[in-house]
Image (cartoon, rainbow, N blue to C red; front, side):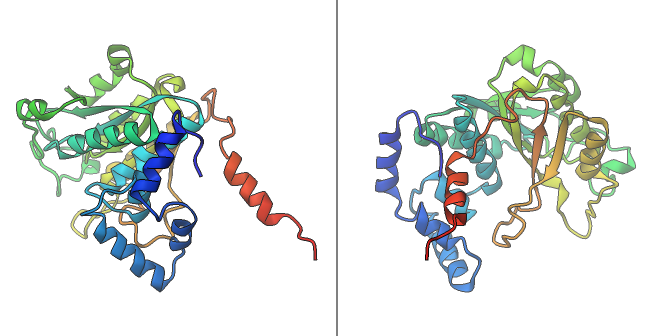
Length: 302
């Protein structure tokens, strides 16, 4: 269950019009057995042709960028429970720009369905990957100028997202003072390299009030092929480990609740940032769920 939206009648009528599987029935379908997996697969296929609420799209692991949808949707839900009416979403490593354009569409859908504004930002060097010299940057897999962005073409297509072009080390340093964004709720990181990822994580060196107390993260380059061979000694995984070693008030941890779901393709790529120094970190958000659990555990009369 979710907290009450600003306009609950609008959301409830939309859910009634657009979906019959949200709620108890869908929670039943999430059980991991053969028949339910088949039903989920059929519904996922149907989602390409039928407009479904975001909650259903996320549960089905459907859509063009399901990991992006997962992070943005759950960040928005957390913000609502904290009575925050707008959040920022960041993509590090824009490349062709398709992910950033997709985030614009998801932001609009979140605002329509949940009544919460989402501001989208994209960070990119504008020149593709830099010179790859460090062993930790996987020079056997990445080379200079890969994934170069066509900045003018992308800017012409963007409607609301802000594209920030430059060295991520510099653009991250003055992001909050230059753009004054709402709290950051989700970060989608596709910077490929250990060094660039490490620079992007310095965003968390800023005041925790610039973020939600827990931020949803996606790292693209922590799962790969036998040629990439990502591990804790290189790439994004090394950047994450080193961040956790130096940071005492922010912890990046791998998502655990998705791991039992083999139908979720990105389950090893979702992380959480816990900002334990955030003034709202301890704010209770589990009212409905805890009440339901207590009800199930209550001693029953014979």
